[in-house]
Image (cartoon, rainbow, N blue to C red):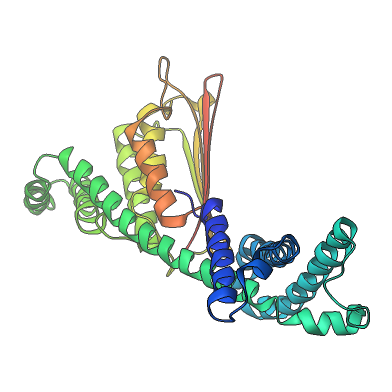
Length: 344
């Protein structure tokens, strides 16, 4: 999803502005058509609008993304810089380039002095700053609303696919609880495993349809998942699972961590001490990093065109825009993945 407004819309906006201002001079100011449409008037109007357009682009593509979203105070301080730069751009276009072409100045000799010229043009640049900031805010709000809607759709799709792959999950959940009640006094270890499985199923049913889930809950889910897998491998599972950093109140997109974890178990070699796999989760500065490493089972070729991976990238795009990193690398018989996303 493109988070930036297409450049053609900027051009159309200023073309419309040029036409409106021309009609304004004719219809409202009462200037005759000939004086408005002669070569020199068109040249001055075009260069003036071009100066506005250049400062508009500078604000929209550089200053607003850098400062307006996170450092509004610095953005306010950048406005005088933009206005001074507008005066300089206009001077070069009209008093240097146009003069070289026509031999005529737009300003009189005394008014071309630096102090007067800067003062006279200082507020002519305000429309470019105000318009670019307004367009940037409107476009970001539009993108935020579109991402929220698409994220809801993708989460529903993920939930539907997950539920499709299970046989009556609510029925299984209730049945596991019954088994636990019967086993708790006969085989405590097996009963504990059933309780963990029941918690996993409960989490899948109740949390997967949410827009965001608590990171602590998602990590507990991964821990339980790995613990059950440990039983399946009969304690001969060679996997390093590490969590670095603190996690309390942060939120994360649901089913992200399990995507990477599950694929390690599904496709990785985990029963050989010389080919140990690893899953590392790091929380630093309001960002989450997930990295996995595993040797690939013979004949496996995954992550390339899988529906799960495409669904994940779509959901990350809708949730975080361009503010995330997702990398995967296959070399020889090993596979490495890396994810870096912001925490909310």
